[in-house]
Amino acid sequence: MSSDNRSGEIKQAIRDRIAEERANWESLVAEVDPAWVTEPGPMGEWSFKDAVAHIAGWRQRWVDELVAAVQGTPIPTYDWPYTYEESEEQSPEGDAKTEAINEWLFDQSRKRTYDQVLAQIALQFATMQGAVELMPDELIEGTDTVAGSSGRSLVERLVSGDAFSHYHDEHEPEIRAWLDRRRTGEGSAGSGSAATTCGECGGAIEQDDLVCPHCGISLVSG
Image (cartoon, rainbow, N blue to C red; front, side, top):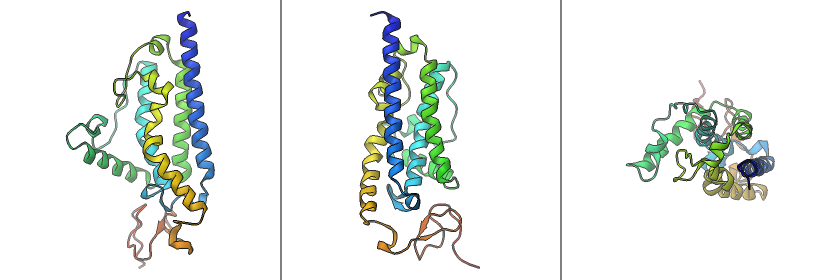
């Protein structure tokens, strides 16, 4: 098989994987009633909107590294409290640093709307698809790696779907379990009663909350 044919087959495999992942994601989003998106439950106290922002926040690093590899440009810098490498499990206090990044991402996203966080993931898929079309043969055939790749090449991570493992392994099962409960009427806010929501961001709030857990606005009148 010629190098051109091999590169073309690999590139098509990447296209197929991204299309499959995008369809999987859009199918999940279509199952979520817009009235549920700010309720806690999909990720502990975090809402589905929070979960989307979290997934998008961590994936952005991967997307940016893919684009940088394709274009031969530097990877953008981030304002995260720690670097990706510092947050890895084997690094000193890796778990605590990961949690600090999670809270920072949550704080950055809480003023964004649900449509805005969904748009970030849609743009990420479109960016990945565009990057594939610009991917040079030397990158397709090469062994370039990115952060968190465990030594696997960038292309191998894309073809195998490992680039999407954060969502599939850590969050998709919990989100789908929440969806199953929500569709059957279990686990809804207020145990079946109408949920109270924040007038600023629309997030679900409890009767004794003094500040909104989603946007931080004071809920104390006067």
